[in-house]
Length: 403
Image (cartoon, rainbow, N blue to C red; front, side):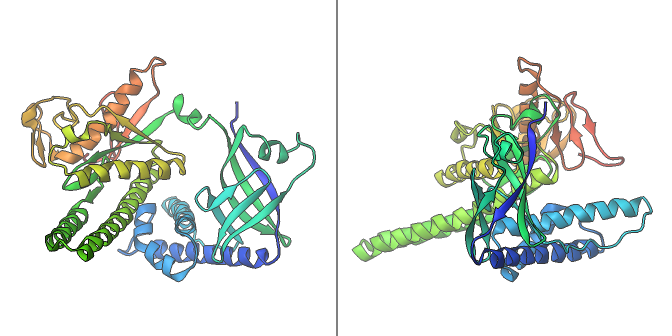
């Protein structure tokens, strides 16, 4: 049974909308072509096929060069990376190819850059949002009306394009409640994420997000508040409120950036789930964490949860017991395995960063939970820095690589 539908929807464009949409697709093409040029030549002599690397290298520049929203800029970069990947595969097969170029008047929208209604859509443009009504067949049983007006289907993303002077949306729709259709009975690949004080987050792919910036500003703002509190004046009290507002804003921006990169890491490695430890008793599990850290952990999870959902990825939490002192290679569990940030298994001798070992165990916790499910679960792999760790505890790695 199929649950995904594609609907081609003609748009009724209000006055001046055509100009706004043309500017949108022009800037979107600029993002895609700039990314294609950068990725094709590479910054180190090699083609760049990593979406995360491309975004890190180009995002700030393209946000300055265009008036597109962050989401549209990211979509332009990712479209280029996908084309670069295809070109690289052709080169590997000794087929002629050249750098991809983008000339079609298209732009890719999802629910962050567009609001899809049953009779109209609100689209982000460089000049703000515009609303366009749908032009649909009157017969409710004829596509695309059949799916657009059916509350059982929801919009996931759409490609805006122009044909013969008219604008259309090629919309991808999913039956409500069937988000997990592909992952409930099919194969899953999960990204484990460990949270900590020195390393804010560590992914099972080996990607680290340092907490140095967070900790630095936490100390700085504590000093500023302390100095103002000693004054004891009304003016100082008002200044404290201003300091706290700036502090919240800085930390929110930082956590949004980390959340975006975690989700990008999951997208890059085709993960269906991002797995965190259960945050209910996080204070007991990370006793050295301050209330700032505990707040950051919960806020980071919230951001990842909704950002991941927009990419069709689910964020989940698992029981954190023994994830810190269990060996992710042989399963031997002992308190002596971990010493600060160093992990060395007393049984098999496996050594690695303790938080990286924990991130793999967090992914494995989800694996075990799925295998113990009433329905037998589904095949689950934990994504590593190279290859995957499967349900049998075996690494599926490229030749001559190590996890």
